[in-house]
Image (cartoon, rainbow over all chains, first blue to last red; front, side, top):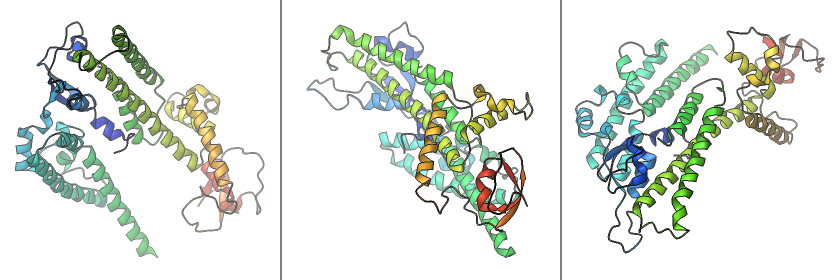
Length: 188
Length: 210
């Protein structure tokens, strides 16, 4: 992941629910209430770039102070909730991942860096593999008929998240390229 | 919330990646994001002022957290700004390698943007305000072109930016689209060696007749 990677930066903007562990007078604006102090226990959706370091900072006891805990505690975002996980477990192809998050796998990877969730990891992996096979199938078909696969798979393709879209495009270009090359071979 | 404007900028960059041409430079948005960074910096200084340089994060957690949020917001904005410009300069470098003329390019894109209002008149070409590039970007392209030219100059017998496709014929017919002054090639004026005029075709002075 590069510093300049646009998709990584957009993934960083995905919101994660955070519960504040202390009162902070100056941060009321985070809860759309600039005049009031931010109360301990308030849960707000914060972008990953803010949430991750707020949760990690101060965790290592920088002093002998017994109060050495983090500013916020993180929770799993709704797009990775147990409902979504059970739906993916039932049939990975039936869930429009794009509706959950535009960078679904990116968000999943970032969250799994922070949480120990073996089962979620397995589900996400299986989801990707199952869907990738279908994506390749649709992309190949689209190459053959030149209508970008509009028709049967339309619903499925609309539900692809960013990474899958890239995969679709690569797969589609690959199939097209092979076809063109084969035709060129026949000519000579 | 802080960082929202930066996000808008990155969404612009994402759009740019999927477009064939370079959309206009977001002067206003860039200015707004830098202004946000300045405001955040002012806030940080105001927060730290009462401590007179002896601030201990563990003694005052609420202030420490506010400072961290401000710092992270500034860092985020910096990343958004850099990524936005990086995406654009990447594209500009690509255009330079392809052999487009920057002044010409700026005019061309201005024409693309106002295709409905003005015909293919040459007046648009000279109108610098139509350019999709910021003045800094134009300068960047100019200097990058010089750099590339100097690099290419080391090899006189090979054109690094030439076409990678092997030509079918050594000679081709061309039609002149724009007046480029008098150009004599080794062989003639309209039936010429492809290698001699490749650059002129890329720049849009000539059209190859098949």
